[in-house]
Amino acid sequence: MKISMDDVFPLMASAISGLDATEDERKDRAAYNFLADIRHFLCIRAGPGVVTQLQEFGLLLEYLLSNGDNDVHDLVQDSLEGLLECERRDSVARFFGPKTQELWTEVRKTVP
Image: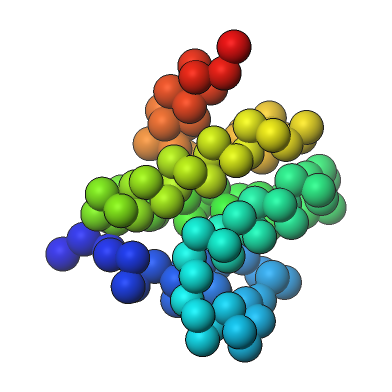
């Protein structure tokens, strides 16, 4: 059975060490907003001090792409599109697994 949007928030809320969902986020279960928060947090801090969190982010995206339904796939793609705005995107992307790397390559082609 594929992971659906109903199932994805609890996975994300516990995926990145040191980054916890707020009570409001847990209540709203706003997956797009929370994944954007994770991406923003890691983009700002990308570097040697957050390697574990970057690895966890890469594992999370790979897991969601491998096991998620089409809506979850769209969630990950949206997050990767948002990562294009990050100056340290390459520092984040080096922790992507093969499926995420493949999608990242496709997303990057959309940018001139």
